[in-house]
Image (cartoon, rainbow, N blue to C red):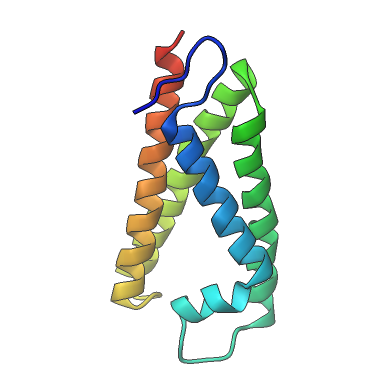
Length: 132
């Protein structure tokens, strides 16, 4: 795995996490009904859910861009926040699955995706801290 150097290059984990955030954010912003359909195929998307996906879509795009543009202490802060954000997403998906609010397959998938993002955030933070 590529390591971040003193010259300011980012680790593969940072690029991976930024790419995932930007991809998911664009999907949430531009195609919220596609994502909603993956969570609930039995009904038409609720307008509030469409709004929420678009709202979080733009937020997620901006978070991904921050990983690509920030440096130094600001980048480390973004990475620390990423661990909290993705860890919270993981716990939310798991709890929704355990409570039966999501179909089992969807709960496992969303929990696994969020856990992978959490692992990337932790890895990126460890690499960033290791370069100091």
